[in-house]
Length: 408
View (tube, rainbow, N blue to C red):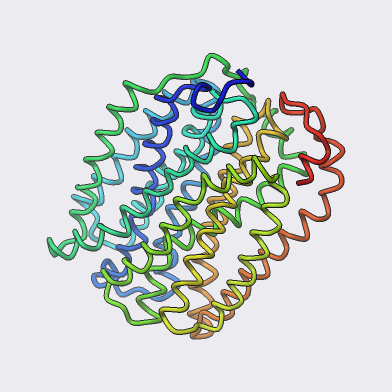
């Protein structure tokens, strides 16, 4: 298989199913991001409470990814995905029909994390069909399902404004979930190369390895940065630049498009140039852009900066998961859940940092500078371990790699 081209390798219906499942789940996962500026019209919320509302789905997703990752290893990614979609319908129906208090919306927000946990089933469904040399592209295509964020930011506030009721948006969201469940059930197929089910001891062993924590840090900044920004930017544009809800969501859409569609590019470039070199360059770019954004420049300029930053974060997602299967080929199911959970935790803390700093200081500037510093920490961490990676990864992951390939 390793000698075949990408189009001849793997299982395309499962790759498409993985993308579709991830795409629709992402759409649901970030629903509260753009809707928050409309929902806050019904509830008197502080800046930190707004941040809590949009951050809770991300926290729920990060916790439940470990659960779905464990299920994926036990019952396979297809059945795990089916269960995940069925459970996702519960908070959508509840928000549509019953959620009329802020506490009930917090409950809905946490349960929406089930959709975010789709990561732990969708990526192994695709990954297990492909050999190491196509991991970056395959994982990038499946992971491009985060483009579902674009659907949410583009249409959620428009639907709420048109009907004069934000509850109905959750009812509409049930339609694509049901359709995706049917398509997924028909097309998705588990790879015959399923690893042995992981045990809790296996998870404990992974947490005892330094590289596990390092990948968690790296992904908490790339993926966490993307999803955190995607959920919070509408609030940022609304409060900082006084944009109306629909217009604020439109500006968010412009930025989110970059991160969504450049994830496969990041995986492909990492395959060609090397994930380590890619990540160092991307984190440096993100740190610089965040430093500029902290100056809170005019709307047009800050939008351009955010667009480029989201593009870099999207490519960083693909680059991280080009490296993970090389380092942990036999434990990819476990690592997908662990690293994915870390990404969700990063996405939880980003709105919290911006919201809490805004409430404490009256400005977003310090919050963006803190995020810039975190990106610089990632560069330092990679530089510290790079030499060890070059020597220890040779011959791992099912494809013998040269030192040059790994260090690139």
